[in-house]
Each structure stands twice: as structure tokens, then as C-alpha cells.
Image (cartoon, rainbow, N blue to C red; front, side, top):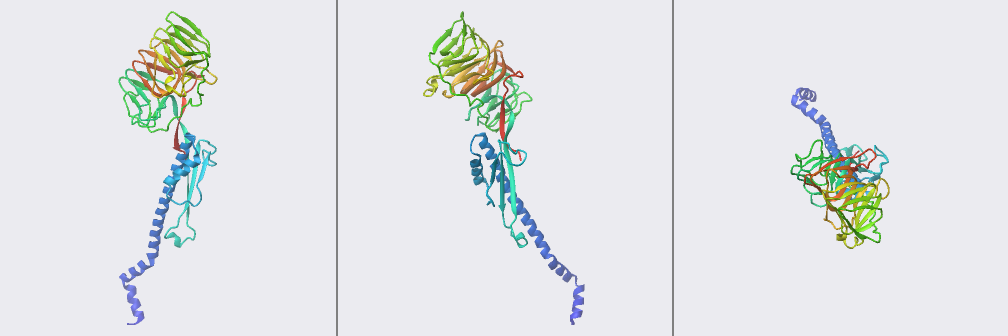
Length: 415
């Protein structure tokens, strides 16, 4: 058979044509498959790198919240969570130089780059592609809190029980890591938003709309942490004000326990209780404007159990407001932070009581209960653990010129 005739027959053979076409298109098919595989690999690497950048930025923002080293926090996190070799050292910026949060001292920007060879694209490009990602995280505002529990363990931080009725006009937060850091039981009703906890929070019918629960939130700072440790003046004496007595107190006095059963007026200033108890009896009538009571002890450094405590009877008529300036601005009661943990302090209010200012008991518990309501203005309640019980009813308001609630914070990705 001549070659010419063989070629004519081959041209008419369909199976032969398919074979030729298939062979001719094979490089295109292989190239397309290779491109798809390499594209998937690139996407996987970019996702892994982005996840590492996100985690590093969040770690850096948390370090700002904790007053730690941003660079150390990000570097340590990347060592744990980044699995790809970096083409250049990571860029770590506190107060980023670019992006929506440029110049924000509470923001951290992390930029990562990697350069990886690809098995198929390597035939067509001489330089491996560079993959770059960035992430920015920041400490941002997350509600206003006027009640903060500094409990850091597994104990309940804030508790509502009995027939207590709370309407705060602000939020509550606890640093408790308990499965349910805030509990609301009995016939209590709670209107306070948001309610935040480092641990979990269980929904309850005792929370009144629009209360919002925020479990697993960032720990809140101690808003009064900058207050100095008290220095107790000399000459402290025991003082009792009997049911029939009327006493006018001047500032900077110091008492080894102060028991008030009668009428007491406090001029503006600071008053020290050196050990013992600051007690307001059931018949007490107490007034004071611009005052701060410091519950402390000369032996606080060596004996936390010696620090004074607060005991307020529900029958007492108390009208007190805190200073509007100075070291103790906005603070009505300040218990020495060197006090032993776990002690209790009691406030029983009634409809004839008015409090304006902060209650600060950083190491001990405080219980607010009673048989009637109390009027609070610009209430700022900070303690290790806090409980509301009995038939207490608190309506909290704050005038325009009063001390505001504490700004809550959380860490989140912002870019």
C-alpha cells in the first residue's frame, strides 16, 4: 500500500482522529489541572498565613489590655500558630502606620509574607510567588459598666436573689471564669445592659429586656487601681455616737472603729477607719457632702484581717455624696486593697437613703440587701464579689455633671 493511500485512509478513520486530537490537547488539560492544584495550594497557604496574622494581632491587642509587651506577645503567638516559613521578619506595629486605625495606641497591626515554590507553576515562572497578608486588632469600647466584680476564680461574681429589683441604667461585668459568672434567681428582676463575664452566662427570665448577655468577654480592668494605698494618720480613737447624740465631724479624722446610732454630719473631706467597723445603726441619721470613708489599718501590710469593714443597717437614714475633685474624686467608700480576701461588707438601704459615688472593695465581698429601696446617683460599685438580696430595690440615676459609668473594653479584629 502506497503511503499516499495509507494517509487517505487514516484521514477517514475517526478513532485515529480522536487519538490525534487527544494527544494534541493533553498539554492543555495537564496545564489546567496543574494550575487548579497550584491555585488551591496558594489559597491554602494564604488562609494559614492569614489565620496566623489574625491570632498574632489579637494576642498583641490583649497584651495592651494587660500592659505587657506587644512585640513579645505577637512573637510568642506566631511561634505557636504560624506553620509557614516567613520570607521576611514579621512586621509588628503598635499604633499602626496604615489602615483605619493608624496612630491608634490601642491597636496592633501584623504583616506576614511567605515565598513558596509551586510544583507546576515552577515550570513557567522563575521566581516563586510571594504571599502577603495583614491583620489589625484593637482594644475597643464594649459597653458602659457601673458594677464590676473583680473575682478571677471559678466563683460566681455577681448574684441576684430574693425579691431584689435592680434598674441601673448601665451594665455589669465580672472577671469570674465560672460556667455562669452572674446568677439571677428567686423573684429578682434585673435591668442592666450589657451583662458581661469572662466565663459563661446562662439566660434567665429574671433579666428584663433590653438586657444583653455577653459571655466569654475580655477581663475588665480595676477602674480604681491608681488609688494610692492609704496612709493612716496618728491619734486614731474609738468613737461611738449614741441614739440621743448629735455630732458634727471635721475631715482628716481617724477612728479605731466608728459606731453611729444617732445623728452624724460629716463635713467635706476624708475620714479614716483604722481597723474595727464603720457601723451605721438602725436609728442612725447620717449626712455628708463631698466625703470619702477609707477603711484601712496601720497593720494592713502585715495583717490583712485587721482592715476595717462596713456594716450599714437597713433602718439607717443615710445621705452621702463623694468628692467632685481631688485624689478620691467620685469615691465614697474605699476599702484598703491589702485587706484579706473573702471578708464581707453589708449595705442595707431603705427609701430614705441616698448614695452618690463609688463603693470600692477590691479584695472583699459586698452585699446589698434590705427591705426597701434606696436611691443611688452615679453608682459605681467595684468589689471582689457582689450580691443583691432581700427585698432591695435600686433605681440608679446620674445627672449630667455626675461621674459616668466605666468604659468597658474588649479585643477584636478591626482590619
